[in-house]
Length: 416
Ligand code: 7TS
Image 1 (cartoon, protein in one colour):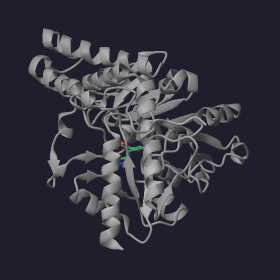
Image 2: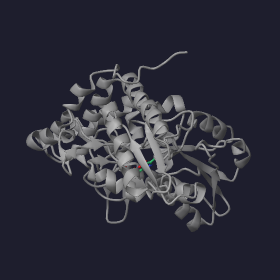
Image 3: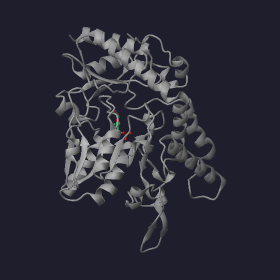
Image 4: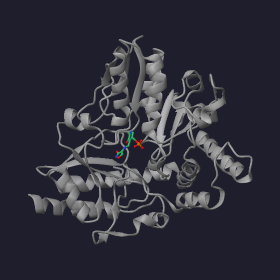
Protein backbone atom coordinates (compact mmCIF):
# COMPACT_ATOMS: atom_id res chain seq x y z
CA UNK A 1 0.00 0.00 0.00
CA UNK A 2 1.20 3.49 -0.85
CA UNK A 3 1.67 5.63 2.24
CA UNK A 4 2.16 9.35 2.50
CA UNK A 5 4.92 10.64 4.70
CA UNK A 6 2.67 12.96 6.62
CA UNK A 7 5.26 14.21 9.04
CA UNK A 8 7.55 15.94 6.66
CA UNK A 9 6.81 19.06 4.68
CA UNK A 10 8.43 17.81 1.52
CA UNK A 11 6.79 20.20 -0.92
CA UNK A 12 8.83 23.27 -0.15
CA UNK A 13 10.45 25.15 2.68
CA UNK A 14 7.43 26.30 4.69
CA UNK A 15 9.51 27.92 7.42
CA UNK A 16 11.24 30.07 4.84
CA UNK A 17 7.92 30.94 3.24
CA UNK A 18 6.50 31.98 6.63
CA UNK A 19 9.19 34.65 6.89
CA UNK A 20 7.40 36.43 4.06
CA UNK A 21 4.31 36.77 6.25
CA UNK A 22 5.29 39.07 9.13
CA UNK A 23 1.87 38.89 10.78
CA UNK A 24 2.35 35.19 11.56
CA UNK A 25 5.28 35.90 13.83
CA UNK A 26 3.42 37.15 16.90
CA UNK A 27 1.84 36.02 20.15
CA UNK A 28 -1.89 36.10 20.73
CA UNK A 29 -3.16 35.72 24.29
CA UNK A 30 0.32 34.71 25.38
CA UNK A 31 0.68 31.94 22.81
CA UNK A 32 2.22 31.82 19.34
CA UNK A 33 -0.43 32.70 16.78
CA UNK A 34 -1.82 29.72 14.90
CA UNK A 35 -3.83 31.23 12.08
CA UNK A 36 -6.32 28.72 10.69
CA UNK A 37 -9.01 31.06 9.39
CA UNK A 38 -7.74 31.31 5.84
CA UNK A 39 -11.11 30.71 4.20
CA UNK A 40 -12.24 34.00 5.78
CA UNK A 41 -9.15 35.83 4.62
CA UNK A 42 -5.55 34.92 3.91
CA UNK A 43 -2.54 36.76 5.31
CA UNK A 44 -0.42 38.90 3.00
CA UNK A 45 3.18 38.32 1.93
CA UNK A 46 5.72 41.14 2.05
CA UNK A 47 5.55 41.47 -1.73
CA UNK A 48 1.88 42.47 -1.50
CA UNK A 49 2.44 44.75 1.50
CA UNK A 50 5.36 46.39 -0.32
CA UNK A 51 3.30 46.80 -3.46
CA UNK A 52 0.64 48.79 -1.55
CA UNK A 53 3.32 50.80 0.24
CA UNK A 54 5.19 51.47 -3.00
CA UNK A 55 2.07 52.63 -4.79
CA UNK A 56 1.34 55.32 -2.22
CA UNK A 57 5.00 56.30 -1.88
CA UNK A 58 5.71 56.64 -5.59
CA UNK A 59 2.83 56.80 -8.07
CA UNK A 60 -0.40 57.58 -6.24
CA UNK A 61 -2.56 59.41 -8.75
CA UNK A 62 -5.96 58.98 -10.38
CA UNK A 63 -6.19 56.62 -13.34
CA UNK A 64 -7.35 57.31 -16.91
CA UNK A 65 -7.68 61.03 -16.19
CA UNK A 66 -4.51 63.02 -15.97
CA UNK A 67 -2.06 63.72 -18.72
CA UNK A 68 0.66 64.09 -16.13
CA UNK A 69 3.36 61.51 -15.58
CA UNK A 70 2.18 60.08 -12.26
CA UNK A 71 -1.33 59.56 -13.60
CA UNK A 72 0.13 57.78 -16.62
CA UNK A 73 2.25 55.57 -14.38
CA UNK A 74 -0.71 54.70 -12.17
CA UNK A 75 -2.85 53.94 -15.24
CA UNK A 76 -0.11 51.76 -16.72
CA UNK A 77 0.27 49.78 -13.50
CA UNK A 78 -3.51 49.44 -13.16
CA UNK A 79 -3.91 48.14 -16.70
CA UNK A 80 -0.84 45.90 -16.43
CA UNK A 81 -2.49 44.26 -13.45
CA UNK A 82 -5.68 43.72 -15.45
CA UNK A 83 -3.60 41.94 -18.08
CA UNK A 84 -1.92 39.83 -15.37
CA UNK A 85 -5.35 38.78 -14.11
CA UNK A 86 -6.55 37.99 -17.63
CA UNK A 87 -3.57 35.73 -18.09
CA UNK A 88 -3.99 34.20 -14.61
CA UNK A 89 -7.54 32.97 -15.29
CA UNK A 90 -6.91 32.56 -19.03
CA UNK A 91 -9.62 34.95 -20.17
CA UNK A 92 -9.57 35.80 -23.88
CA UNK A 93 -9.55 39.57 -23.50
CA UNK A 94 -8.90 42.24 -20.85
CA UNK A 95 -12.35 43.66 -21.75
CA UNK A 96 -13.72 40.72 -19.81
CA UNK A 97 -11.92 41.60 -16.56
CA UNK A 98 -13.84 44.03 -14.38
CA UNK A 99 -12.39 45.35 -11.12
CA UNK A 100 -14.97 45.15 -8.35
CA UNK A 101 -14.82 45.23 -4.54
CA UNK A 102 -14.90 41.46 -4.18
CA UNK A 103 -16.89 38.34 -4.94
CA UNK A 104 -20.00 39.78 -3.32
CA UNK A 105 -19.98 42.84 -5.51
CA UNK A 106 -19.23 40.78 -8.63
CA UNK A 107 -22.31 38.62 -8.04
CA UNK A 108 -24.46 41.63 -7.15
CA UNK A 109 -23.34 43.33 -10.35
CA UNK A 110 -24.51 40.38 -12.44
CA UNK A 111 -27.80 40.13 -10.53
CA UNK A 112 -28.51 43.85 -10.89
CA UNK A 113 -27.68 44.07 -14.60
CA UNK A 114 -27.90 40.72 -16.39
CA UNK A 115 -30.44 39.48 -13.83
CA UNK A 116 -32.75 42.50 -13.90
CA UNK A 117 -32.82 42.61 -17.69
CA UNK A 118 -33.24 38.89 -18.41
CA UNK A 119 -35.33 37.46 -15.58
CA UNK A 120 -39.10 37.86 -15.77
CA UNK A 121 -42.13 36.55 -13.94
CA UNK A 122 -42.20 32.76 -13.77
CA UNK A 123 -38.55 32.40 -14.80
CA UNK A 124 -36.11 30.32 -12.81
CA UNK A 125 -32.61 30.65 -11.40
CA UNK A 126 -30.74 27.61 -10.10
CA UNK A 127 -28.20 27.68 -7.29
CA UNK A 128 -27.04 24.95 -4.91
CA UNK A 129 -27.90 24.16 -1.31
CA UNK A 130 -24.34 25.05 -0.24
CA UNK A 131 -24.08 28.66 -1.42
CA UNK A 132 -22.42 31.39 0.59
CA UNK A 133 -25.04 34.09 1.33
CA UNK A 134 -23.30 36.23 -1.31
CA UNK A 135 -24.39 33.80 -4.01
CA UNK A 136 -27.83 33.25 -2.55
CA UNK A 137 -29.30 36.52 -1.29
CA UNK A 138 -28.81 38.52 -4.55
CA UNK A 139 -30.74 35.81 -6.44
CA UNK A 140 -33.36 35.46 -3.72
CA UNK A 141 -33.91 39.20 -3.88
CA UNK A 142 -34.07 39.26 -7.68
CA UNK A 143 -36.57 36.38 -7.73
CA UNK A 144 -38.72 38.17 -5.15
CA UNK A 145 -38.67 41.37 -7.20
CA UNK A 146 -39.51 39.60 -10.44
CA UNK A 147 -41.83 36.90 -9.13
CA UNK A 148 -39.36 34.33 -10.39
CA UNK A 149 -38.40 31.03 -8.71
CA UNK A 150 -35.13 30.08 -7.09
CA UNK A 151 -34.31 26.37 -7.28
CA UNK A 152 -31.65 24.44 -5.39
CA UNK A 153 -29.40 21.56 -6.38
CA UNK A 154 -29.51 19.39 -3.24
CA UNK A 155 -26.52 18.46 -1.07
CA UNK A 156 -25.75 14.93 0.22
CA UNK A 157 -24.91 14.02 3.82
CA UNK A 158 -21.24 13.92 2.78
CA UNK A 159 -21.46 17.44 1.39
CA UNK A 160 -21.48 16.67 -2.32
CA UNK A 161 -23.95 18.03 -4.86
CA UNK A 162 -26.62 15.54 -5.90
CA UNK A 163 -26.65 16.13 -9.63
CA UNK A 164 -28.95 13.27 -10.73
CA UNK A 165 -31.94 15.58 -11.14
CA UNK A 166 -30.02 18.60 -12.40
CA UNK A 167 -30.71 18.17 -16.10
CA UNK A 168 -34.44 17.85 -15.39
CA UNK A 169 -34.37 21.16 -13.53
CA UNK A 170 -33.26 22.99 -16.68
CA UNK A 171 -35.84 24.38 -19.09
CA UNK A 172 -36.51 27.41 -21.28
CA UNK A 173 -37.61 29.10 -18.06
CA UNK A 174 -34.09 28.83 -16.57
CA UNK A 175 -32.25 32.12 -16.98
CA UNK A 176 -29.08 31.38 -15.00
CA UNK A 177 -27.29 28.72 -12.99
CA UNK A 178 -24.99 30.17 -10.31
CA UNK A 179 -22.79 27.73 -8.44
CA UNK A 180 -20.07 27.84 -5.83
CA UNK A 181 -16.86 26.22 -7.13
CA UNK A 182 -15.50 25.33 -3.68
CA UNK A 183 -17.72 25.41 -0.59
CA UNK A 184 -16.33 27.70 2.10
CA UNK A 185 -17.89 25.71 4.92
CA UNK A 186 -17.41 22.13 3.66
CA UNK A 187 -14.39 22.42 1.38
CA UNK A 188 -16.17 20.43 -1.35
CA UNK A 189 -14.83 21.02 -4.86
CA UNK A 190 -17.90 20.95 -7.07
CA UNK A 191 -17.81 19.48 -10.61
CA UNK A 192 -18.52 22.87 -12.14
CA UNK A 193 -17.25 21.95 -15.59
CA UNK A 194 -19.86 19.21 -15.82
CA UNK A 195 -22.56 21.58 -14.53
CA UNK A 196 -21.60 24.17 -17.14
CA UNK A 197 -21.64 21.61 -19.95
CA UNK A 198 -25.09 20.40 -18.94
CA UNK A 199 -26.52 23.93 -18.57
CA UNK A 200 -25.10 24.99 -21.92
CA UNK A 201 -26.96 22.13 -23.63
CA UNK A 202 -30.06 24.15 -22.72
CA UNK A 203 -28.46 27.51 -23.56
CA UNK A 204 -28.45 28.49 -19.91
CA UNK A 205 -25.51 30.68 -18.83
CA UNK A 206 -23.54 29.78 -15.71
CA UNK A 207 -21.95 31.99 -13.09
CA UNK A 208 -19.20 30.57 -10.87
CA UNK A 209 -18.48 31.82 -7.35
CA UNK A 210 -14.76 31.12 -7.29
CA UNK A 211 -14.00 32.88 -3.98
CA UNK A 212 -12.60 29.69 -2.42
CA UNK A 213 -11.18 28.15 -5.57
CA UNK A 214 -8.59 30.54 -6.96
CA UNK A 215 -6.15 30.34 -4.04
CA UNK A 216 -6.03 26.54 -4.20
CA UNK A 217 -6.15 25.51 -7.83
CA UNK A 218 -5.62 26.77 -11.33
CA UNK A 219 -8.84 28.34 -12.56
CA UNK A 220 -9.18 28.57 -16.32
CA UNK A 221 -12.33 30.37 -17.48
CA UNK A 222 -11.98 29.25 -21.09
CA UNK A 223 -11.50 25.62 -20.16
CA UNK A 224 -14.47 25.80 -17.78
CA UNK A 225 -16.42 27.78 -20.37
CA UNK A 226 -18.23 29.66 -17.57
CA UNK A 227 -20.12 32.80 -18.56
CA UNK A 228 -19.36 34.74 -15.37
CA UNK A 229 -16.90 34.13 -12.56
CA UNK A 230 -16.08 36.18 -9.46
CA UNK A 231 -13.33 36.07 -6.85
CA UNK A 232 -11.81 38.26 -4.13
CA UNK A 233 -8.27 39.58 -3.75
CA UNK A 234 -8.14 39.08 0.00
CA UNK A 235 -8.65 35.31 -0.26
CA UNK A 236 -5.70 34.89 -2.63
CA UNK A 237 -3.03 36.58 -0.44
CA UNK A 238 -4.01 40.01 -1.83
CA UNK A 239 -5.63 43.09 -0.32
CA UNK A 240 -9.20 43.58 0.84
CA UNK A 241 -11.65 45.75 -1.09
CA UNK A 242 -10.66 44.43 -4.49
CA UNK A 243 -12.00 41.54 -6.53
CA UNK A 244 -12.57 40.44 -10.06
CA UNK A 245 -15.64 39.82 -12.13
CA UNK A 246 -14.97 37.89 -15.31
CA UNK A 247 -17.76 37.93 -17.87
CA UNK A 248 -17.85 36.77 -21.47
CA UNK A 249 -17.70 39.79 -23.71
CA UNK A 250 -20.97 39.03 -25.50
CA UNK A 251 -22.82 39.11 -22.15
CA UNK A 252 -21.04 42.16 -20.75
CA UNK A 253 -21.68 44.10 -23.99
CA UNK A 254 -25.43 43.64 -23.68
CA UNK A 255 -25.67 44.34 -19.96
CA UNK A 256 -26.60 47.82 -18.72
CA UNK A 257 -24.17 49.62 -16.39
CA UNK A 258 -24.24 48.75 -12.69
CA UNK A 259 -23.40 52.19 -11.31
CA UNK A 260 -23.26 55.58 -12.96
CA UNK A 261 -20.62 58.29 -12.89
CA UNK A 262 -16.91 58.80 -13.51
CA UNK A 263 -15.04 56.20 -15.46
CA UNK A 264 -18.07 54.50 -17.02
CA UNK A 265 -18.84 57.50 -19.19
CA UNK A 266 -17.70 58.31 -22.73
CA UNK A 267 -19.58 61.58 -23.20
CA UNK A 268 -22.28 63.44 -21.34
CA UNK A 269 -24.64 66.22 -22.34
CA UNK A 270 -27.37 67.71 -20.15
CA UNK A 271 -29.78 65.39 -21.91
CA UNK A 272 -28.02 62.07 -22.21
CA UNK A 273 -24.91 59.97 -21.65
CA UNK A 274 -22.93 57.66 -23.90
CA UNK A 275 -21.43 54.86 -21.82
CA UNK A 276 -17.79 53.90 -22.02
CA UNK A 277 -16.59 50.69 -23.62
CA UNK A 278 -15.76 47.49 -21.75
CA UNK A 279 -14.57 46.99 -19.11
CA UNK A 280 -14.85 50.65 -18.04
CA UNK A 281 -18.61 50.63 -18.49
CA UNK A 282 -18.68 48.70 -15.20
CA UNK A 283 -16.05 50.72 -13.34
CA UNK A 284 -17.84 53.85 -12.15
CA UNK A 285 -15.93 56.31 -9.97
CA UNK A 286 -12.33 56.25 -8.80
CA UNK A 287 -11.46 52.58 -8.39
CA UNK A 288 -9.39 50.90 -5.69
CA UNK A 289 -6.16 51.61 -7.58
CA UNK A 290 -3.64 50.33 -5.04
CA UNK A 291 -5.76 47.21 -4.53
CA UNK A 292 -6.01 46.57 -8.26
CA UNK A 293 -2.25 46.82 -8.61
CA UNK A 294 -1.45 44.78 -5.50
CA UNK A 295 -3.73 41.91 -6.49
CA UNK A 296 -1.18 41.53 -9.29
CA UNK A 297 1.54 41.09 -6.66
CA UNK A 298 -0.62 38.39 -5.01
CA UNK A 299 -0.89 36.57 -8.33
CA UNK A 300 2.90 36.73 -8.69
CA UNK A 301 3.19 35.21 -5.22
CA UNK A 302 0.87 32.31 -6.12
CA UNK A 303 2.68 31.75 -9.41
CA UNK A 304 6.08 31.73 -7.74
CA UNK A 305 4.87 29.23 -5.12
CA UNK A 306 3.42 27.11 -7.93
CA UNK A 307 -0.08 25.64 -7.86
CA UNK A 308 1.27 22.10 -7.77
CA UNK A 309 3.35 22.75 -4.64
CA UNK A 310 0.61 24.72 -3.03
CA UNK A 311 -2.07 22.10 -3.71
CA UNK A 312 0.16 19.22 -2.60
CA UNK A 313 1.14 20.98 0.62
CA UNK A 314 -2.45 21.88 1.49
CA UNK A 315 -3.68 18.37 0.71
CA UNK A 316 -0.98 16.98 2.99
CA UNK A 317 -2.18 19.28 5.75
CA UNK A 318 -5.76 18.18 5.14
CA UNK A 319 -4.83 14.48 5.27
CA UNK A 320 -2.78 15.07 8.40
CA UNK A 321 -5.62 16.96 10.12
CA UNK A 322 -8.08 14.18 9.21
CA UNK A 323 -5.73 11.61 10.70
CA UNK A 324 -5.30 13.65 13.89
CA UNK A 325 -9.01 14.32 14.25
CA UNK A 326 -9.89 10.66 13.79
CA UNK A 327 -7.54 9.70 16.59
CA UNK A 328 -9.02 12.34 18.91
CA UNK A 329 -12.49 10.75 19.04
CA UNK A 330 -15.74 12.55 19.84
CA UNK A 331 -15.41 14.73 16.80
CA UNK A 332 -17.73 14.84 13.81
CA UNK A 333 -16.41 16.20 10.53
CA UNK A 334 -19.03 18.02 8.46
CA UNK A 335 -18.18 17.65 4.79
CA UNK A 336 -16.38 14.50 3.74
CA UNK A 337 -16.56 14.88 -0.03
CA UNK A 338 -14.04 12.95 -2.11
CA UNK A 339 -12.73 16.15 -3.67
CA UNK A 340 -11.94 18.78 -1.06
CA UNK A 341 -9.73 21.77 -0.52
CA UNK A 342 -7.96 22.28 2.81
CA UNK A 343 -11.04 23.10 4.90
CA UNK A 344 -12.25 21.06 7.87
CA UNK A 345 -15.58 21.89 9.45
CA UNK A 346 -16.34 19.94 12.59
CA UNK A 347 -18.23 19.76 15.86
CA UNK A 348 -16.99 18.31 19.11
CA UNK A 349 -19.81 16.07 20.37
CA UNK A 350 -21.72 17.80 23.18
CA UNK A 351 -19.82 21.11 22.95
CA UNK A 352 -21.16 24.27 21.33
CA UNK A 353 -18.92 25.51 18.50
CA UNK A 354 -18.71 28.97 20.10
CA UNK A 355 -17.24 27.46 23.28
CA UNK A 356 -14.68 25.56 21.22
CA UNK A 357 -13.78 28.70 19.28
CA UNK A 358 -13.44 30.83 22.42
CA UNK A 359 -11.15 28.38 24.20
CA UNK A 360 -9.02 27.92 21.08
CA UNK A 361 -8.70 31.70 20.77
CA UNK A 362 -7.41 31.84 24.36
CA UNK A 363 -4.72 29.43 23.18
CA UNK A 364 -3.81 31.70 20.26
CA UNK A 365 -5.54 29.51 17.67
CA UNK A 366 -7.74 31.38 15.18
CA UNK A 367 -10.58 29.35 13.68
CA UNK A 368 -14.02 30.41 12.56
CA UNK A 369 -17.19 29.27 14.31
CA UNK A 370 -20.86 29.57 13.36
CA UNK A 371 -22.66 29.34 10.04
CA UNK A 372 -19.79 30.70 7.91
CA UNK A 373 -22.35 32.74 5.93
CA UNK A 374 -24.01 29.50 4.82
CA UNK A 375 -26.83 29.48 7.35
CA UNK A 376 -29.32 27.45 5.28
CA UNK A 377 -26.72 24.72 4.73
CA UNK A 378 -25.62 24.44 8.36
CA UNK A 379 -28.96 25.08 10.06
CA UNK A 380 -31.55 23.67 7.65
CA UNK A 381 -29.61 20.97 5.82
CA UNK A 382 -27.34 19.70 8.61
CA UNK A 383 -29.49 20.81 11.58
CA UNK A 384 -26.52 22.21 13.46
CA UNK A 385 -26.15 25.37 15.55
CA UNK A 386 -22.87 26.01 13.74
CA UNK A 387 -19.54 24.32 13.17
CA UNK A 388 -15.91 25.04 13.96
CA UNK A 389 -13.91 25.56 10.80
CA UNK A 390 -10.16 25.21 10.39
CA UNK A 391 -8.94 26.26 6.96
CA UNK A 392 -5.32 25.88 5.90
CA UNK A 393 -3.20 27.98 3.60
CA UNK A 394 0.18 27.56 1.98
CA UNK A 395 2.06 28.82 5.09
CA UNK A 396 0.43 26.47 7.61
CA UNK A 397 2.37 23.57 9.08
CA UNK A 398 1.76 20.18 10.60
CA UNK A 399 3.01 21.52 13.92
CA UNK A 400 0.14 23.98 13.85
CA UNK A 401 -2.31 21.13 13.31
CA UNK A 402 -0.70 19.36 16.29
CA UNK A 403 -1.35 22.51 18.32
CA UNK A 404 -4.96 22.57 17.15
CA UNK A 405 -5.38 18.92 18.17
CA UNK A 406 -3.84 19.63 21.59
CA UNK A 407 -6.18 22.63 21.89
CA UNK A 408 -9.18 20.44 21.13
CA UNK A 409 -8.11 17.99 23.84
CA UNK A 410 -8.07 20.89 26.29
CA UNK A 411 -11.52 22.00 25.14
CA UNK A 412 -12.84 18.50 25.80
CA UNK A 413 -11.22 18.35 29.24
CA UNK A 414 -12.71 21.69 30.18
CA UNK A 415 -16.19 21.20 28.77
CA UNK A 416 -17.01 17.51 29.25
N1 7TS B 1 -18.43 33.15 -1.81
C1 7TS B 1 -17.73 32.28 -1.04
C2 7TS B 1 -17.70 30.84 -1.42
C3 7TS B 1 -17.04 32.76 0.07
O1 7TS B 1 -16.35 31.90 0.82
C4 7TS B 1 -17.09 34.13 0.39
C5 7TS B 1 -16.43 34.68 1.64
C6 7TS B 1 -17.79 34.99 -0.46
C7 7TS B 1 -18.46 34.47 -1.54
C8 7TS B 1 -17.83 36.47 -0.25
O2 7TS B 1 -16.57 37.00 -0.49
P1 7TS B 1 -16.26 38.53 -0.19
O3 7TS B 1 -14.80 38.66 -0.40
O4 7TS B 1 -17.07 39.33 -1.15
O5 7TS B 1 -16.66 38.77 1.23
N2 7TS B 1 -16.30 33.72 2.66
C9 7TS B 1 -16.01 33.96 3.95
C10 7TS B 1 -15.85 32.93 4.88
O6 7TS B 1 -15.94 31.75 4.62
N3 7TS B 1 -15.57 33.45 6.08
O7 7TS B 1 -15.53 34.78 5.96
C11 7TS B 1 -15.80 35.11 4.63
